[in-house]
Amino acid sequence: MTRLSVEMLAAETVEPITSAGHAQLGIAVLLGIAVIVLLITTFKLHAFLSLTIGSLVLGAAAGAPLDKAITSFTAGLGTTVAGVGVLIALGAILGKLLADSGGADQIVDTILAKASGRAMPWAMALIAGLIGLPLFFEVGIVLLIPVVLLVAKRGNYSLMRIGIPALAGLSVMHGLVPPHPGPLAAIDAVHANLGVTLALGVLVALPTVVIAGPLFARYAARWVDITPPDRMIPQRPSEDLERRPGFTATVATVLLPVVLMLGKALTDIVVDDPEAGVQRAMDVIGSPLIALLAAVIVGMFTLGRAAGFTKERITTTVETSLAPIAGILLIVGAGGGFKQTLIDIGVGQMVLDFSKDWNISALLLAWLIAVAIRLATGSATVATISAAGLVAPLAADMSTTHTALLVLAIGAGSLFFSHVNDAGFWLVKEYFGMSVGQTLRTWSVMETIISVTGLGFVMLLSLVL
Image (cartoon, rainbow, N blue to C red):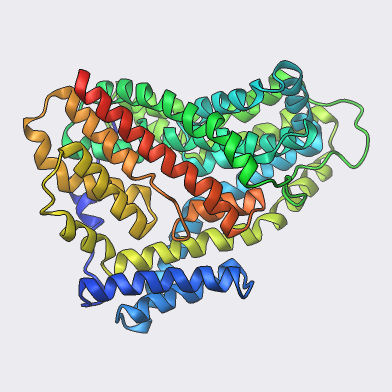
């Protein structure tokens, strides 16, 4: 297992850039979020500009020096773009190769032939869950979105009916099931057993995906009736192709990064020796950057060349794939900047201070702390690490099973109500072409259902195990 050292946990806690009290910080948070929502919904200002202005208002209202508030925002923006931006770009290239070569058509045609009508949302949830097991949420998004949009368009399905199950499958795996970084961090902090946590995580994840995915999608489709945005839908090739890639080759190319990342996760669990050659090699090969880069390179042959593309045509495909994602990169980056500003002014620590004297069940306490930090900072990982560190002493007298359930309670709390301070919120909004209000009524509600449902199953298991 990849262990998170005490030093890494300590690094998450930084000296706040302001000495404001809790009341002032609370007002600053509400004001910052209100400014962002008002600028986007009332004044129709671009989300990137709104998030930038909201971050500066947040810092100023909290009493932080303007130069430090700017530094926090730019640092958060840079970190987010560096971590997510390259993955989005590589995913866009792979998606364009899939579309132009006819590979996406091949996948969609096969899915529509094999699963139709009521079975389609369940099929999308299953596919997303399998793909999301070893993947970061953002990587899963860029791999699945082209397929989701095309299935909705070609099959004449409601985008929410198809998209919500896919998002639920990815999100649940990200928050509850190791080897994702959040659950691994919590496992290490409370000294839980990885195998037990993995088994119970899957047990909680399955019914949670069903409830927050296919079942909730029925209502989400009624609340928000939208069509797939044309600018994000992989278009059919502009000319008729003599041939297109086979289904097996296309699926193998899409799943290549999944296999590489899963291989890294399994190596971390089985070998558990950072100095071992095989683990060091898999740490490189199975990293999201290398895994997606490998898929792009392989796709140039299994997709592009298989469709008869020349070298020049492949180069053109790569170039034209990047322009549509420029706005998304800026918005997601600005969301990361707003999140970092929240963290740097001390909002996370404020939540921890408030929760110290809560006298309730350890599992519920862990969930509530994670919820509060998630709402304040927008980061599921920060919420997981902070909450795990705070409740770690409570795990000392717990059984192996209940320690694992403590990890899952933290993970469930870290997914609660994603909103404007979460980069993932903006990623989903832009990919699905929704307004802020529509994203809140679908994505944010879905995340809340996952969080509450996950806690419910954790509490039920605590009664019988």
